[in-house]
Image 1 (tube, rainbow, N blue to C red):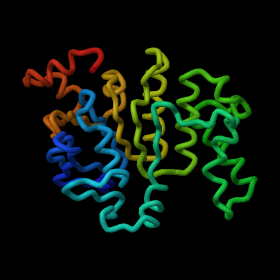
Image 2 (tube, rainbow, N blue to C red):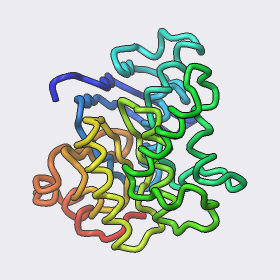
Image 3 (cartoon, rainbow, N blue to C red):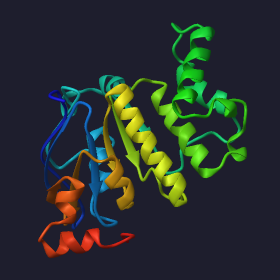
Image 4 (spheres, rainbow, N blue to C red):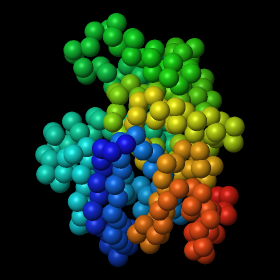
Length: 247
């Protein structure tokens, strides 16, 4: 750690009378896993959309990988986004393509990469998630956990500097959820990536987080390690950690 990857200052965003982000200040260091907790509607998804310029904030500053995104044109912003990996809840796979074709897809626009290099990158990505044997399967042949793994392989194939995980364990059984959480840690250690992990899964948060922030009413009301926050004397924070599921 020591290099700041993300810096957010006084971020605010409203939709009509709904004040989603009231005043968010945040830094993320190189190699850090930051977990964002909060009830549904607390602004977690809006936060990461502002981070990559998909939503324009009303006020505040967002610096991603040393670039103030408000100063970038569309072309430069798209170049910056290529350094950001996403793992969506659905794994975002094309059902009509094999696993191999899904992983090749983001590389097809790179004319500088010969087929042999693309093949090597696909195999390496699948090895990273323990799914080499699934290379020629269709998404419909995969379990939910396997689809998540392939989605993560597709993220890793572009060698991102930061990965945004949106509910990475949603819909998975406890054993598979733990496997995905362990995989997030393996990726962090192997590639020294920074990650923002949005989750309602407290076990995922416990296993993956270097640091946790909790959003409520558009602000960060608590920050610390899982142990520190779970032992908080604040009644709301304490009750939050005593809930198995957050609605």
